[in-house]
Length: 445
Ligand SMILES: Cc1cc2nc3c(=O)[nH]c(=O)nc-3n(C[C@H](O)[C@H](O)[C@H](O)COP(=O)(O)OP(=O)(O)OC[C@H]3O[C@@H](n4cnc5c(N)ncnc54)[C@H](O)[C@@H]3O)c2cc1C
Image (cartoon, rainbow, N blue to C red; front, side, top):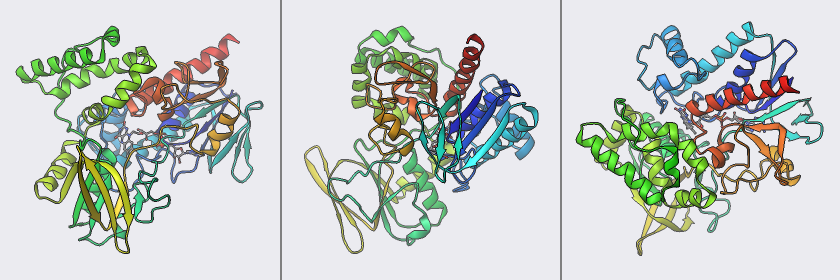
């Protein structure tokens, strides 16, 4: 079997590792990636030494059936011994590359890594063509292209703003230490920017603005708690389900157990609940509960949280809620007009950083590798508006409702179908299921 994986971030590498562990000497894998180094993707590049994983070491093994694998590597390679700790993010890419090297030695499968951009997948021949003309024939193509870039949040007022920088391109070196920065978005990518600014000796002011003004909550020492809900509770009205969780949190807190333990206890069931909800309920959740869910579910490491709250206390970081109602660039800065509960406010800064989170509509966004497949009806958007229409294994479902048995996806593209699909504990399970399904299918044809 010839497997071509488009994207060599964590998802692509985890799929490649599973194929290498399972495959035969007649199998080949090609991983096509246009990033700096394989395994890095957007999350694990050595952009800043101060960025920490936001999942404990014990949650980050590459293999679902070897939960201590990353912890053991940390002991060996880094002399780091705290399984519950939050380690530098770039160590994770190092770990993935090390594991690739181990599997290359041990596996019968022949691996090729192509550094470049895959730009076309032929729906009939399944041939993948890269920029520059190199082509790879595939029996199976796995799209692991990660998140889309963020949309321009001030598009209505300025289609090409020059003082609004995307978080992926922002570098603290481009600003003076005493400037005033506006960050649009207040999730974990905003937190990353603050950490980088702080580490660079930035002494100026930061104002982070988002619709609700929430920031991610903090991880605390792990404790177990019985899960208060089951997948069958997905049939309850959303408000009743929410009340059940709130009551469980109150009981936990009365018993001295932090709310984080209750949220973590729900984690094994969230995918099941999401899948059981119909599209209307999913969309209602996205509209009304997503922001509050995200800050409780996607939390900061305690060390990072301490730094952020020190900056808030010192008045260096302000987080405010509001809807953007206007955007103006002047010669030396930007002005953002906000509205909250009928009140207007104008924010001024030297520059703004876009941390609004990734776009979620792969089909309408002009991503070349998806574009032609979308035009041919091979890939279609998920009904709820985020990610792609797939079956439970991650195979694409085309415009006529039929599964494309040769075309799979992993990572953020699965969000509409699975909800939980972008953190390593989910990606490694999806990678395992995907590869198991590939080989089971091969044995039965
Ligand atoms: C800043 C940040 C921090 C995070 N921290 C954690 C964490 O601590 N723990 C955790 O579990 N999760 C974390 N996550 C979640 C994270 O999304 C995943 O763990 C992981 O990055 C997902 O990897 P991916 O391969 O799906 O996507 P990506 O990391 O985006 O990788 C996709 C890769 O595909 C390449 N690519 C895309 N299109 C093409 C193409 N056409 N041709 C060739 N190459 C292409 C991209 O260049 C990139 O290298 C974090 C996410 C972010 C954004």
